[in-house]
Amino acid sequence: MVVPAVAGYMFFIALSVGGPINGILSTLTGQRIAIAWLLIPRLRSRAMIADILAVEAVMFSLLAGLVGVPMIR
Image (cartoon, rainbow, N blue to C red; front, side, top):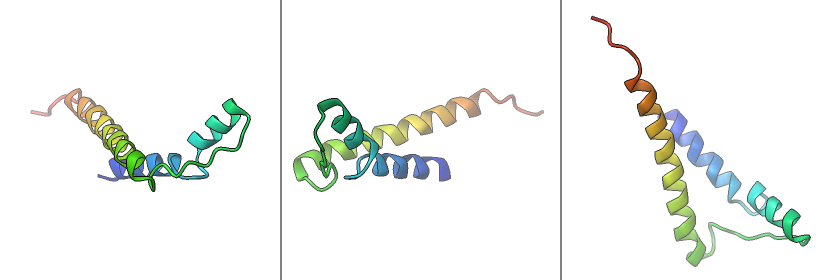
């Protein structure tokens, strides 16, 4: 359960005001962008859905790895 928690925290940091998503948008537009993705109600629901999908992708990749491990008899 540590890996999905870390994935969720990394996504939380990426969506913070000083995070890399705002940094990339600032670089692309040439203006300083500081969107509080998780504080604006209209954006928060979309950001939380994206966070849930990211954690689920980590869980599925872990499950795929576990399925590939041969069983000991």
